[in-house]
Amino acid sequence: MDKLTKEERSRTMKAIKGKDTKPEKVVRSYLFSRGLRYRKNVSSLPGTPDIVLKKWKCVIFVNGCFWHGHLSCPLFTLPKSNVSFWQNKIERNINRDRENTILLEQSGWRVITVWECEIRNGKDSRTRLDDLYLEITTGSTP
Image 1 (cartoon, rainbow, N blue to C red):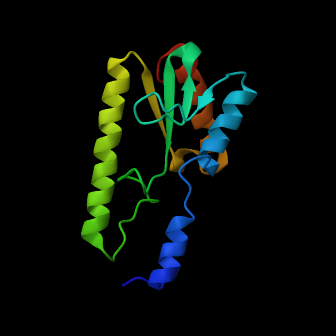
Image 2 (image 1 turned 60 degrees about the vertical axis):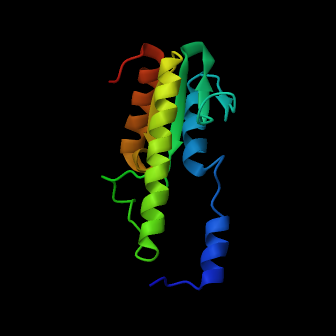
Image 3 (image 1 turned 45 degrees about the vertical axis):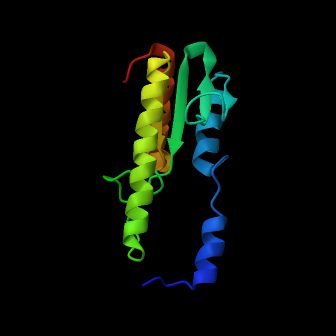
């Protein structure tokens, strides 16, 4: 059973942003500080990638662990109410992400996914961002 009323839950869910989230801002700020220039939310590409580095032919999706079904993550917990709705919603998101990745790769783009949990806080986030920079500029995963 939900701890919030239907109205409170609705207000909470409406407040969740789809663009310019904190994790996206962290990644963009880091990339900019390293001298990389990019475009945000390019709608002409499949999936409207969060960050597009045209020079490197690379797109980055900064995914929230809950919304994109990061199943091995402690930040992902399926809600206990309306379970079938949430399972279907998250499955559709995962399938859509997979399809967009395939379309982008077929068009010659390198696709990198950064998960919210990887850049949340601490030294591990700095390591992930450093690895991301190397992945973009060298084309290989560290």
